[in-house]
Length: 78
Image 1 (cartoon, helix red, strand yellow):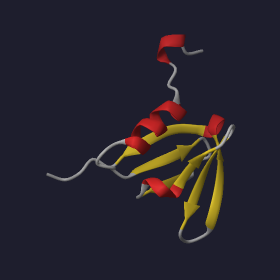
Image 2 (cartoon, one colour):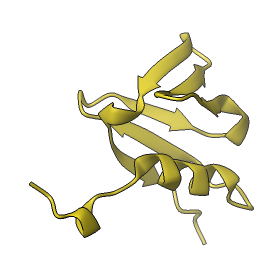
Image 3 (cartoon, one colour):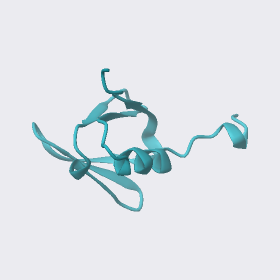
Image 4 (spheres, one colour):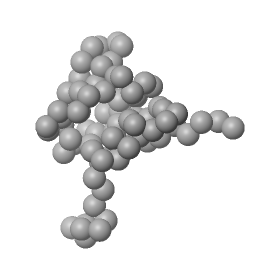
C-alpha cells in the first residue's frame, strides 16, 4: 500500500493543468487503459465523482475520478 505522501491527487493535478496559461494539451489515462486527449480546456468539466469529457468522435464520456491513474502532459516543442 502506498504511503500517504506518495498518493497523487489526480483531480487537483487535472485542475492545475486545466487552468494552466497558456493551456497545454494533456491526456487522462484510466485503470482500464483508456486514454482521453484534452486539446482544449473547454472540453472537460468536473463533477462530484466524475470528470466529464467532450469527445469530438463519440460525444460525452464520464470518467470516474477513482479510475484515473495518470495524466500525461504534451509539453510544447521548442
